Length: 114
Length: 112
Image (cartoon, rainbow over all chains, first blue to last red; front, side):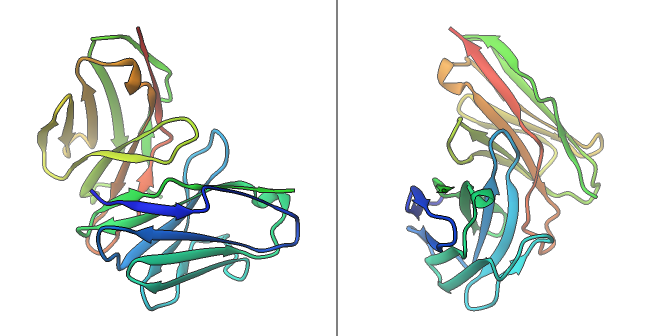
């Protein structure tokens, strides 16, 4: 498997502020990471694919200027939600790609924007 | 548009029974298949991956793949209340495509 951590596990912020979420691969070097979000009782939605040292590839409908992704090292990717609004409240989950096919998920970060 | 179909459930089985979860997929070029378990409020956990036709066993779990029928299943033997969760079926096309296409998940309840 793979050990993936996320920080923070939950965060509450005020509307208009920015929030940074960290995703760390603890036991191997992850060239490729993914960011998802999940609204209550809904499926996981892929937001973007992040490759170390290059720009992230965003899914259609995801604003790249709002959701900033930085994959600066083989063990760390960050997602910054800029100018957060209540509709951005969700469960944000990262995953790492291992052995070319298997994705292992972090524990997730629950964001609440008030 | 690739699709992965699962019965949303809930599927209820008594403790100790076999739970059978099914999944069909639309893309004939799909190569890799995965079963994830997701407890309420938690992130998905990979429990099985399968790439070749046939059965793959890991402890109480058996994944079955039939590419001709575009069908993949997960059997859970000796089901336990702790197995109660939503089970997500997912696939990738391989060939450099790593993105997962998920089904909507089947909610399993194991009744003590």
